[in-house]
Amino acid sequence: MVTIEEVLRNIKLKMNAKNEAMIRSAYELALNAHTDQKRKSGEDYIQHPLHTALNLARIGLGARTITAGLLHDVPEDTDVTLEEIEKKFGKEIATLVDGVTKLGKIKLRGTKEENYLENLRKMFLAMAADIRVVLIKLADRLHNMETLESLPPEKQERIARETLEIYAPIANRLGIGDIKARLEDLAFRYLDPENYNYVANLSAAQQEKRKKYIKKVVTELKKELGREGIRFVDIFGRSKHIYRLFQKLKRHDMDIAKIYDLVGVRIIVPEIVNCYETLGIVHKKYRPLVGRIKDYISLPKPNGYQSIHTTIFGPEGKFLEVQIRTKKMDDEAEFGIAAHWIYSENKRSFKDLLFGKKTKVPDQELIWVKQLREWQNELGKDDHEFMEGLKIDFFKNHIFAFTPMGDIIDLPEEATPIDFAYRVHSEIGDRAVGAKVNGHIVTLDYKVKNGEIIEILTSKDHKNPSRDWLRFVKTSNAKSHIKKFMKKEGMI
Ligand code: MN
Image (cartoon, rainbow, N blue to C red; front, side):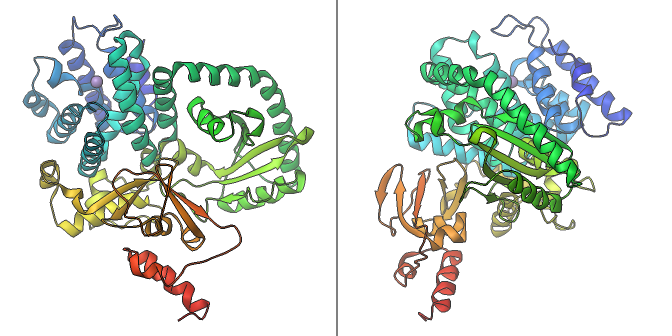
């Protein structure tokens, strides 16, 4: 049972009396409006908006988003209207609640590809209008997944599939690792109970051994860092969530012994420079596995993720993945765009950051936020029209393709795997030798279609952009990289 006090206790942003009063008043309104309503689980309905609000507080959102979270099912399911909400809480909150209601009408019917992509587009549109709407929807979905048990099996299946195919990738896109992981595990449990149980048991069986082992490594690392005078904020062990572990197992013949990063340790340090110092000390203590050092600090992932990863030969010669990052990076990895707000110095609204011209854009602004704003500017539409854009096919000239990890890469129409590769990373473009679309080999001039999963095959020892590629690539990004390479090699 969640209480409003628990929600308030979990808010990470500074609250003033006015904000607290607003949240309490929203709670009172929701409590009264949903009186006598029960969830399918038999719980009082109010538990659902309270859980939603708690999820929002935990990922670092502020008073207005939490207020809208408490009210999100009121206009749809009770006698209290949106107009009354607007009168009491103002236009901004009412717009958020309305956005959530509209987004709620999007259903994944059947498994037809068109519908799925249409839904994905709608999500993006809602996101562009106000990201908070999508965050509330994710918090709402998380609680619905946690209580999915009480629904009939056919509904469970549909909701779980929708969660895995739409909501989890969006949480990933927003960089909210924590919600993404929880959504994936819950969906996996309903969509593939056999494999879920198999992996969950496998993981549990290793748990005890793993705990002891991690404790040993953490102790050794603490001693080592202390000796070298490195301050650290935290060191702890971590394990993969079940769905992610299953994906890895599938790629490794379901052989758990082949998974190097099954056991992991995360080291949180104060500053970026400490990350690299710490990496040096870790490598001095334990031999690193060649080719497994990933510096996502200088080269962040497309969703903004930053961290250093390295796989080492730990005690007893066992492989172990070590992640090193600052506290800020860690919060951003768990809470994504929401954490971004906790760290931004001057408080700006989401809209300001998205569309504002008066405010300076922070350096570490997530790449996709920039993209959204660019598209917005290109089209010169205002917010209102943007929401109305649900009717217009705004994304007509854009294609969304996915990396095997589920990151969304946007491309112009008729883009090829080479455009995709350069969009992911210039190194990947330069080293591309082949491509797979949804698991099948295609030619490099293949025209990528919306929603396809693209895997780029790369060469470890050769860079090989060719003049030929210039004939078919569509993005200026790819063109300029290819030309740069040719110039360097004296080919032009
Ligand atoms: Mn709801």
